[in-house]
Length: 392
Image 1 (spheres, helix red, strand yellow):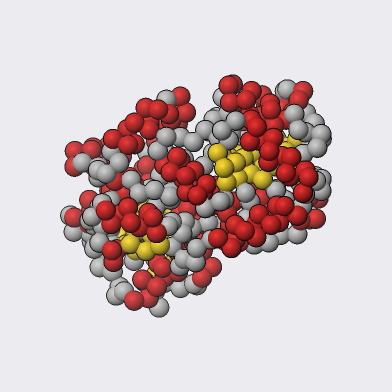
Image 2 (spheres, rainbow, N blue to C red):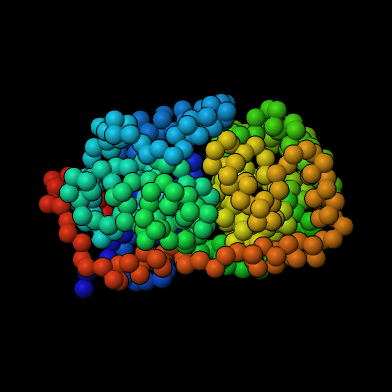
């Protein structure tokens, strides 16, 4: 019997979209042995030379001109991408997408970024019959996600569902499933083993994330990292710089950060383990990172929310009691004093409170599997002469 095939399409504008795709892929395969999944960052796959330049330009714009980004985000908020822009995306980046779909013959396509969502929707209007599911990876619903060809939207909260309905999406096409997180964030690890594995101490611990994009610029570092480092004698700090190795080395050159209680790390696949031994997370309010932290029950402090989706994410997590925005350095003092005075009981109570407030939603992976079990086999486009792409 032929296994069902699921093609998950993302894009490299930030790590969260692709993280969600891989999390969903793993969750699906763990839930059923009758499926094959494939994750593709579509632009990078089709244009491995050009795409990194585009992504780099995007990052520089977001970091250096956040107000401009926010203005553009709000201006387009209730609008789908127009036909001219969609055609330009297709011609410049995604003209070979049809060939990929012809070769992989998926039973369903799942998009975790608006751009591949736009392209697949365009192909569906031209005759593609493969069902399209769209996973919105933030706590907001921007107009660029919306297209009448999407069969089902999987969204984080009921508030996002309501926003999609206001944008004209039929109620039957929206399901509240939460944002998919990798199953490893649902596991509970031995704290003693993790401390030993990473040479950490049993003491109040704060994790700081957000360095991967170079968002710790000089002003932010002096206001945040330098200040937090002043607590190094009493609080253990795990500073995660992601793939930004240059920034990590620069930080390690400073005397203040060469301390037994400060651990400056680069890219790691073990964030889930480090979260298990962290009592507080300081981070930008990206949808994926914050959802992973909630899964681990870690309270959060937010800094430098990018105008747009990160502001909406921040508002959601504050309203739910999962975190607070750092409005002044006094906010850091307040939380660090609480951590020291009531460690570890306070943080355990906070974790229990966060877990108790999480809404009961259907899992993303289960929603997709349920659909496949109910649907007939998809009809496919005719075979292409393009090189065969392997599913996995």
